[in-house]
Length: 249
Image (spheres, rainbow, N blue to C red):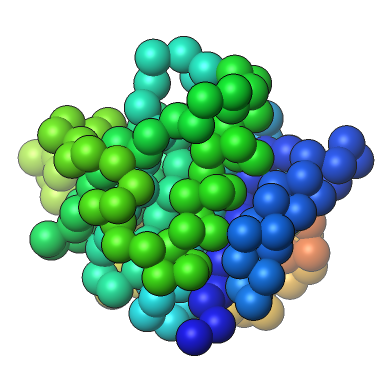
């Protein structure tokens, strides 16, 4: 059976690192279908990688294998993991990038065996790609290592409710369009406050004029702050961790 292997990294596409990983995958699992999710995660941005994994890992068919390499601790004492969760597999460092699958009920996690001679600076090529290839060839997850008892789990910060009914939240990621994604959810419309600005929650970007700020419920289910045809993060000086308030209608 042909297996899908996805790649999510901070390698970029300039230096050939992605090509090396693909070369190892295809050498060991020549029938694998490799899908590039992104190689533009900001360098060492584990949290951005985690949120990317959360969006994509269950969008692929059962049996898919997700390789995630955003690994500022490469070569250190941090473990290398393989996870079996909801019929899919994930391979990557034990730094929280695999948290969305680890939080799923009945996830199975093993610490990977690191091959002798593996580069201390390139586990993507020498540890994670061979493990993913083995899974693509039909190996069981238990054949790849020993049970991992306390993998690192990162969670999206929880909003908090105020006494007046408003909800305090924060921006958790800014996408390439400059849209600022919050950790807030609203089913009833309302208003998002950031600094001195109050922004109405609308259905689509087209509900305001070009250049106007707007809040929408994005495809992730979270409320996003945007500027129609513009960059909200730049114009409004928004970044990860910026405090926002939801006032429901």
